Length: 168
Image (tube, rainbow, N blue to C red; front, top):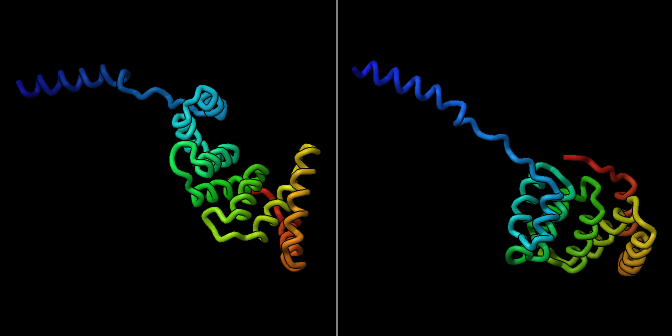
């Protein structure tokens, strides 16, 4: 009798197997993030950004850094903002470079470091930019240069010359 029950359960389990297969995972995109933001669902946008950022998407990393920087779903966390901005900036994301310039320039979560801020502005200014953006970044960079030594300026320029974006 126990053998019959075991056989029936095994057959029933086999018949149910196709129903128990998980559906394919839904692939999150930046369009989903933009939709969530437009619909005023910041937590959903945050969750989607986290998934995309963890996967190495530089735009998502920058946006996630902004969520942490400006406290869009909780208290501001400059350490996490800086980490995500750095990951995106190393991949060539200009907005992330500017975010780092702000963090270092204002000493948000780090000691104020005008040389680091200048370095990120120099790197941002070497990227492909719209003329009005290039002019604004150049003006901020040049203003900041007046507070630095010649050695600090040369070090930032040398780093910009050797910078090469690297995808994760």
